[in-house]
Image (cartoon, rainbow, N blue to C red; front, side, top):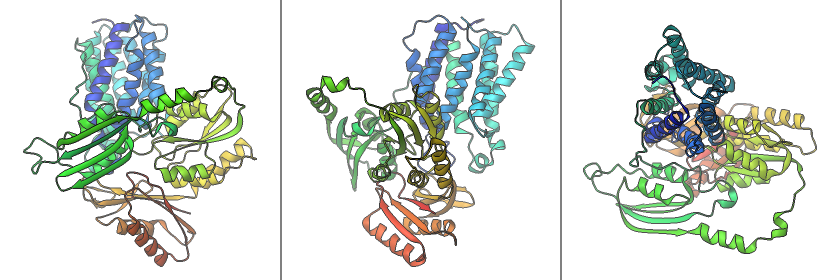
Length: 552
C-alpha cells in the first residue's frame, strides 16, 4: 500500500479504539501503585472512544478532515493525564496533515513526529520512561527509516514504527526506576501500543472488532455528568450466589472492596451486603448491563430487578417546563468556583465554601475535558477558578480552560488533593482581583500536607514498604509510608510522618467505609497523642479512601 486515504484512516482509528477497548483492563493492571486507582487504560479507552465516535459516520475522503474531527473528539473526551497526552499526540498528528488528501510514508512519519512535539509541549515537566518516551523514540526512528528508504510502502513503514514502539516500551523500566522496582512497563505507553496495533491491523486489511467478552463495557465517570442527574438512571438490584470453589466453577474470586470500587465508578447510592455465599447489591447507574456483566464473573444471579428512574424524572421535567423561563438570559456573575469531588459530605464542604459547580469524580473516575466545559457554561460567570483536587485531573481541567467559551476567563488552581482544594477555597475573596485570588489560593494550598488511607490490590514492595493485598496502606503525598491490616493503626503511622512542631490543624475526612466506632477510636487516639494540635473531623462519605487527612 502506497497511501492512506480518508476511509482507510477512519478504519485505522476505529480498529485502534476497539483494540484498546478490548485490552484496557490489562493496561489498568499496569498501575505502579497497589491502590485501587489503576485507571490509565480506562482513561485512554474513554478518550479514544470519544474520538472514534466523532468520525464513525463521516464520509470524508481527505485524511485531514478525518484527522481533525478525530482530534476534536479526543480533546472533548480526554480524561486523566494519559488521555490528555493521547489527545495531544493526535492533535499534532492532525496539524501535520493540513491540506493533505492522503498520507504516504513520508507524511506518516512527519505526522507522528508532529504528534510527539505537541504532546511534549503540553506537559509542563515531561518524564521519560512514559508514553512520551514511546512516541518520541518510535516517531524519530520512523522518520529516520523513511528518510533512508524513501520508497517504502505504508505497510512496511508502519510495521517498523510499531516494532520501535514495542522496543521503546520495553525500555521504560530502565528510564523510570519505580517501574523497574515494581516490575512493569509504563501503562500509558502500553495503551498507545494497543492503539497502534489496531492501526496496523486495519492497514493490513483487518479492522479489529470490539470483544464483548471484555470485563466491562465503557466505564462511566459516575451515574450522571452533573450533580442534578445523579439520582436518575436505573435502580439496579440483584442477589448473587457465589460458588464455593470459584476457579473450578469458571468464576473469579470475589473481593467485596474491589467490587464496591467498580460500582463507585459506574454509579451511586451503592449498597453491597455479603452473607456467606450470597451477595446483595443495590446501585443507581446509567448502564445496568455493565454492572451485570461484571458481576456475573463472580457468581450466578438468584434475583434481579431493574427500574428506570430517568423516565419518571424526564416526564416531570416536561410537565414543569416554563417556556418563558427557558428563554431567559441570566446576567453573568463576576466569579465562580468549580471543584472536583466525590462523596456527598465532601461536596457539602465545598458548597459551604461557595463553590458554584461540583464536577463529580476523582480517583478511578477522572472527569473529561467536556465535563469541565459543561460546568463552565453552567457557572454563567466571567471569571472562573477550577480546583481539580487530583494530579491526574489537572491536565484535563487546563485543556478545558484553553477552549472555554468566549468572554469567560478560566484558571486552574492546581490542587492535587481534597485538603488542598478546601484550603484554597477558604482563601478565595470575591472582592479581590483575579490575579490576587490566584496567588493567595496557590500559596494556601502549598502549605497543606495531604495523606490518604486505602486498601492494597496486590502484593508488592514499593518505597521500601512491603505491601500485602487487602491490607490498608497509607500515602503521604505520593509516597506509601505504611501498610497494616488495621486501618486505624495505618492512619496513625501516617500521621506520625505528617505532623511536626509547626503543625496546628488536622482535618480528618472519613470515608463511606469508616464506621462510627472506628472514627471515635481514631479521634481519641489522635487527641491523646497530638493534644496541642486542633482536630476537625468531617464525614466525607468518599469511596475508595477510608480516611483523607490534611495537616496545616
